[in-house]
Image (cartoon, rainbow over all chains, first blue to last red; front, side):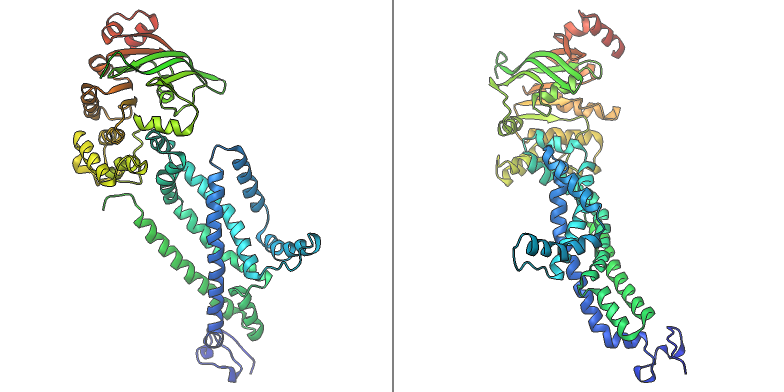
Length: 247
Length: 246
């Protein structure tokens, strides 16, 4: 009897390893914990990346709207540099290139980056550049009259920014930020190339062990989908709560 | 209150935006308790002049003194000046992310002018004064234009300013709401507030102004009492303008 692995074959639900058939259920029972752990690693990586991306995005985003020309120039160069480099190149560069540069050229011994560190930096830079653009656009979307009114009352620039402009800017930015979060979450899969044990990297190993590409990648796709749908649902709830109306 | 005291003195004020010269050479004095109304065609530099008085626009030349203190470039001093010079904008510019009460309390509390409780008390008093006590918890988007502008006036008053600047406060309002805002401004004028008002409301200028300035092309072409300006305009440009708007 030939080995047929069909998701829809009658024996798909009940077949087991002993019969030489491996089903979705089998993969889940054998590799489920592994895949969930890998999802955990994916989320951890995304969380680190997003956390620092928000900081980078906020700083660079604000730099691109202040009067100071040096700040604006720096922001422009940063954003265009990062946007102009594919993330996979950035990942290789940070993970392999930077330690090499330190060890071999600067002669600073022992500089190594773990895959998590390199991956987080890579995501933070990449996502940070896009966040900076979102934040710049968000701040510029707030009517200048808001800043002027705050200044006319005697509030300093940064207090006005903090109390009046940014809260309004962030509200309009939320959909774009969530979108960027989702893109970044999915971009963690690119970091499988530097050996970080996130979901795609782990799934590759599962496929190597089981030869069940269809089922394994199907499971992985659904896992990503669930996480992203949850994120979107949370975002919608947040957006609703931030409406400026008396309650 | 001392009507002889010069509150704001403007000497040879110039302002250009790149190539465009908006204020050529403007000199004026505004006395304590005086209501000065600035009229003139659009693009004449009225608003720019007003915005120079609290440094929302930086002057390109000339001198402005408030209470005999010359405005310097120090940001701290400018901020301190602005605490005493209230401003009301054409488009209200209420803080959309806060309800009315917090709009009024933000600056006094943030600048540590008074405690939170005092700020709230004063905010409520000011709201009552502009007739909007029941709107304390409303957000700006839930108010009509006239209500927004009255809140904006109350917000400025919460800082206890001794000068108020009005930049076309009724120009963005539906006609039926102009009256309620002008009423609040008249009340303020009666109480002796020093006011500089840029407006197209000639009726208001006639009734309330102590002095009317006519501006065109970056210059003050004529100034005088409402009687003088509206009845016997000396400058042909003033006459021309008034013929069009009256």
